[in-house]
Amino acid sequence: MTGFHEALRSGTPRDRAPVSATDPARLVKRSVVVAGHRTSVSLEDAFWAELRRVAAARHTSINGLIAEIDENRSGNLSSAIRVFLLLNRVQET
Image 1: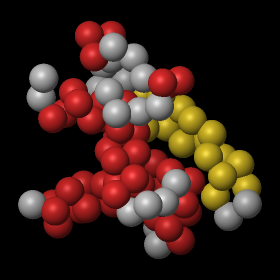
Image 2 (image 1 turned 45 degrees about the vertical axis):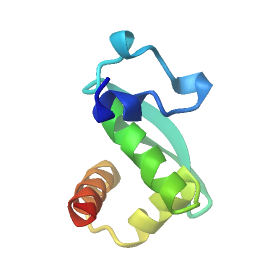
Image 3 (image 1 turned 135 degrees about the horizontal axis):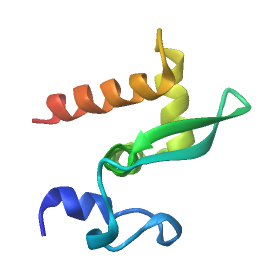
Image 4 (image 1 turned 135 degrees about the vertical axis):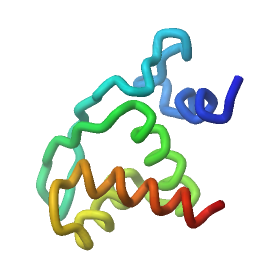
C-alpha cells in the first residue's frame, strides 16, 4: 500500500472507506466552524486526508487548522486550504 493510500485510510471510522472504494479525487463537502460560524468546505478526499495529517502533527483540530488558514487567506477558502497543504508538504521535503 502506498503512503498516499495509507493517508486516505487515516481518517476517523465514520468517514473512512476501504481504499478500493475511495476515489482520492472525489469531492467531499463537510461542515466546519470558522470564527464561530458554521460553513461548508468542499475538498477532494486526498486533501481531507492531508488536512487530518497536518492537524494531528500540529496537535490541533481540523477546525483549528482551517481557522488559521482562514485568517491568512485572500480568496476562496477551499483553494486557500489546498495551497496551504501544498506549500506545507513542499516545506516538509
